[in-house]
Image (cartoon, rainbow, N blue to C red; front, top):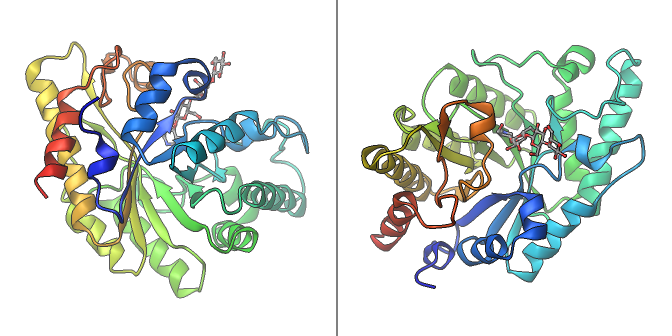
Length: 316
Ligand code: G3I
């Protein structure tokens, strides 16, 4: 026992973690820590389209339902991730199909998924990673075949299926000022001007301990000024292995800095880490030589980063 993160959060800001469906189902220690520290959860993989609908019209809701049930039992909000993402299109969806058929399957997916969890998922990442690094729209199946209007369409379909869900656009590499953040800002401004139901902007935050983003507080503020909520949605801070005290302290400071940015911006609604334990993190398989990116180590012992978050919350 001891102090837990969720108890110290201001009442209008959630603290969340991505959840590994395998560990949720199998590891009691994992479940206990997840329930103790966090009052929001995001499925790391379970709600992605390719996992939800392995065959046309053939759904597997097992893992996503398990997460929603766990969240309800533990007083946690569910952040839905993610409806439209170029990296998780089921293999049975074929780029060469006629445009109207592609549009229809995408619409069906959005409507079916959001309707199933209506009232149970408080926010959705409606579109994920739709920007290229230079701030223009990313080249993807959806842009190529449906044109840029697919983004507004996805928000409208989601809004129809659950008018009370908060609808987010989510991306990486836009936490700090830069070309990608500028492009995201323009896109959100234009969508809002067109009456599209975009309620929030999610900043993933896959960071490196030695490369902090540029002015995240100021950056989040200019999005808030558009009249939308903001959220840190996938924070992790990777370290070049092996770790040492100095690297772990730099990591802790960056976690703390990002929490402070969120707490400073009035419309920041949630602060979510992309997995809470080094026992389950995507980093080592995607960034060889890097790891140790989370708040707890592989044995579920709290790291300086978690202490830094406690410290930031107590100081407020
Ligand atoms: O579950 C299967 C397993 O049955 C199979 O044997 C194994 C063999 O490759 O793959 C397992 O699935 C993997 C899955 O992670 C679970 O570990 C997938 O191959 C792998 O692609 C998948 O990676 C996920 C990745 O998104 C792609 O969907 C990561 O866990 C997940 O952390 C990562 O999350 C993304 C966010 O959704 C969007 N933002 C960036 C973030 C990090 O890349």
